[in-house]
Image (cartoon, rainbow, N blue to C red; front, side, top):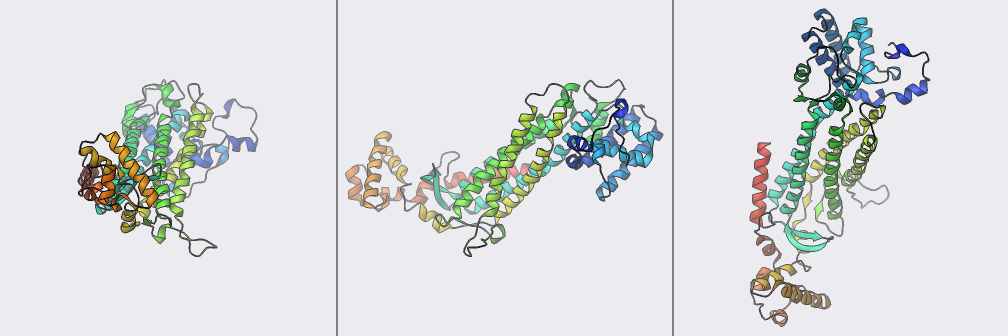
Amino acid sequence: MSTKKLWGGRFQEQASKWVDEFGASISFDQQMADEDIEGSLAHVKMLTYTKILNSKDVDQIVAGLEELRQELHEGKLTFTVENEDIHMNIEALLTEKIGPVAGKLHTARSRNDQVATDFHLYVKNRLPRIIDEITTLQKTLVSMAAQNVETIMPGYTHLQHAQPISYGHYLMAYYQMLKRDKERFEFNMKHTDMMPLGAAALAGTTFPIDREYTAKELGFGQVYANSLDAVSDRDFALEFLSNSSILMLHLSRFCEEISMWVSHEFKYLELSDAYTTGSSIMPQKKNPDMAELIRGKSGRVYGHLMGLLATMKSLPLAYNKDLQEDKEGVFDTVKTLLPSLKVFNGMLKTAKPNVERMKHATENDFSNATELADYLAAKGVPFREAHGIVGQLVLKGLQTHKNLQDMSLEELKEASPKIEADVYHDLKSEVAVERRHSLGGTGFDQVRIQIKNAKQELSDS
């Protein structure tokens, strides 16, 4: 392959090899080779459609690009640092294949709009895969929630027992987080579905190009309305990294809880052996390493977001070489998100809840204290006064090692004569959960409504 710089006409000195290596991006942007060839094919077809190039030249270029794409898929292409990036490498390879006519491919475009187009296509092609993986995980959550509507577990605030809840309700909370994640990625599609090609270096071109034709060929819904913005915009990449960070945050929160739930102290869940590992020294260990690894990988995705924000923060219009730093973080994030979602889904789908252990945890605490306060409020005691009465009973229970439901009726009536024998029914954890009928609450009927709505949403998506 020729190593003469395709842009080197006005240069008298050559850079040192180490300078070339420092400035080159081919080590990573070769991941956009398919997109680069796709963009070039659409561009050259537009050039013949607008009669900028004759059909004979275009046929040669198209045939050469198709051959390169086939060789790419067969793993036969070799790229060089001397040709800097994927665009120059493809053009150099095309020149070797069809001769000088390959140079006509770059008519009416610049690497500035070319790389932006490739990058848009790369993200655009992968967003549906990420959305599909989120949807798969949502379906798992809904299925597991449907099986555990009446499974009782402690609900926590400040990591302290708060009130009993349905395990199905807990799972549906993460369904809602993923729903917002999916909506963010779907909105990200809108800004990714914009074509920069035709903006050229920054000011457009004097050739009579047809950008709408090229956009249709590439499947873009719209073209950038301003050429300066087209070559310098990376909002779509920032949105992608931001959305990815929030998604990883949600997975990380869930993984943190899974790591607790499987511990000896909780024993709420049992993970499949397929998603755990052992210890090289302690034979008894069963470590939730996949959950911990996903939790850890959230940090690298956050780092990519912060890195691109820092890169973009002071860039003047239009294109700057700094923008070469925009891709590696996105590439790595795609490679982090997809397996994280897949592994998490498998881990969750095969996890077994310890139903008895979960329920027992709500019967050996004071998480039914709010039930007693509500009971008194329903009997006319001002809630703030009821709160104080129950607080004193909790203190007494701590001192005497008795839970509220274990106290005698006489002990309870000492605190308030309003308390009758029917209170013991209300203090049961399953009753406490079942009675919470407010919209979006943990009551069994409300959880079933959530599940029904979720199934409808998933069938519509």
